[in-house]
Image 1 (cartoon, helix red, strand yellow):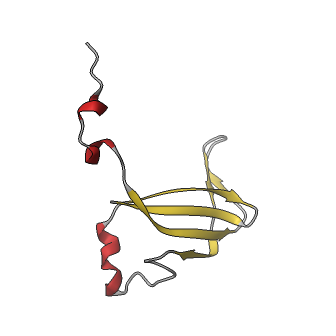
Image 2 (cartoon, rainbow, N blue to C red):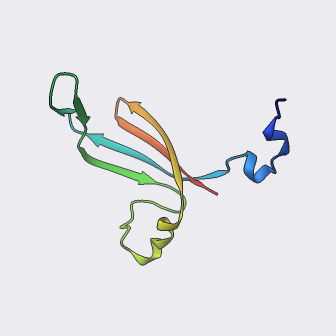
Length: 94
């Protein structure tokens, strides 16, 4: 007998809620290939510059005690490559 678990779960367990934290644009130097035998290498991109902006967080020094709350949250992000470099949107899971 198959049970649809989503019908039995309260909304807080059935859905992931989030709110925007920041958007980050990076500048990455050319990709470095680091590795051993053929096919066993890693692609490494060195971030040479970048910026991030959001309503609650924007270009801050995270050592500042005002931002201790960053150590107590879970964040997820999605991004991709653009002509200007990688672009990511990061969301706080609430």
